[in-house]
Image (cartoon, rainbow, N blue to C red; front, side):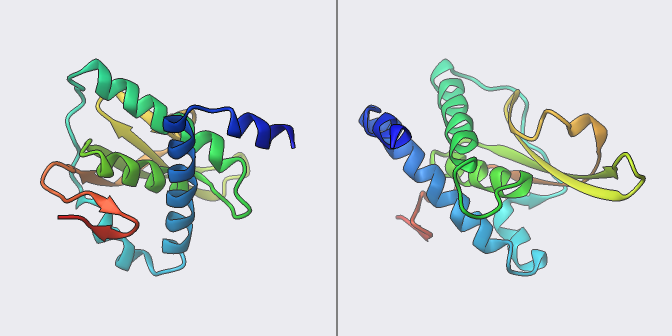
Length: 160
């Protein structure tokens, strides 16, 4: 009950950001039930990366707000919101605002020698998700979402 009250005390912009984060987390989770080869084209240009500079302070602020909203809401989903789900949700929220990003997919080994995978997302110099353990993985695939020539996404459809 306390968390619901805290949510209702948020300003309108933050509340909509949290709702949008929950929507994109759900959409990303649903996408992962499809074969990855079908999902991959929606992630951007394969084996490319975006620039590591981020021009303006408002863009940096927006990127950090999106990362925070996805991080917070991923803790409250009834489904599993692991690294790939969070990275895709962040990417789609950035794409909606025409902010470029790069999704990294990597593989590595856990402490028992078993092969594991990880995903993380970068926009400009800012890592939105998965950066805490990214150095333990070897990058095997990247997807650059340049987001500048694309239409804005409105609940799964392209707006004109």
